[in-house]
Image (cartoon, one colour):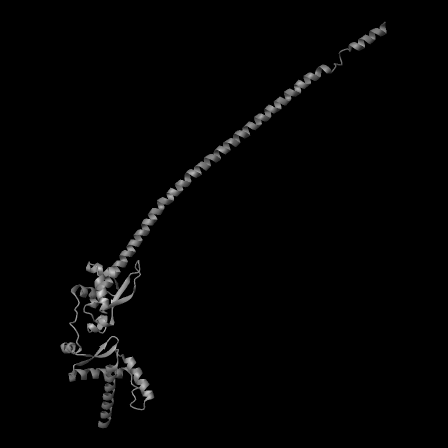
Length: 303
């Protein structure tokens, strides 16, 4: 049993040694997944100690032990877990000696307006410039440029607001600078998130109410418009009806005048026939009257 325990401790120590060397040599922070990938690749190609069968929880447990060892030894180094992985960094208390060693000038500090602007972006990201200026009440163009030059904020996209303004958010360096793993670790972020959610809900309800009022006003405006259009069609219909009535009266008048003209023509025809009869009567001889020529013939016979 003691030999088995010593073998396990040796394996754990070897793993922590390998992890410490990997994190120290890496230029970027290392995640547990990337560490497991490297261990698996080396385990397949190298005939040495095989860590390829280790799970991520085993690697995390070894990293926790390595972090405690750094703190216990007091070597001026700390194993810190950031949002993008693990990294070894120096103790902040050793800063003055390191700045002198590396010939680093006086560290520039953020002004109060810059800190206020950075806090607005950190707590409300993603956020547009107009919203930042609405909170602070001043122009923030210069401050935004300063924060971007310091790699504390970055552009994260465009808003759906009119004009598609740019949206700002914090960077990974912002988290590292303030010793945070993620933005949720900011103090009071939960309370502010609830307040922001309430503000958004109130704004949405106001927009819905304004939309309903606008639709109601549109319906009320459309009703008089329909009356006006009906009224506009009314005179036209009235004119058409009056014109039709006048045409009907003209037809009736023409129909009444036609029989009169026919009667008058008939009367004129009768009068013409009478006059023709009167002209023809003198030519017709009356059978009862004697012909003068016949009387003369009778006289000659007597003689």
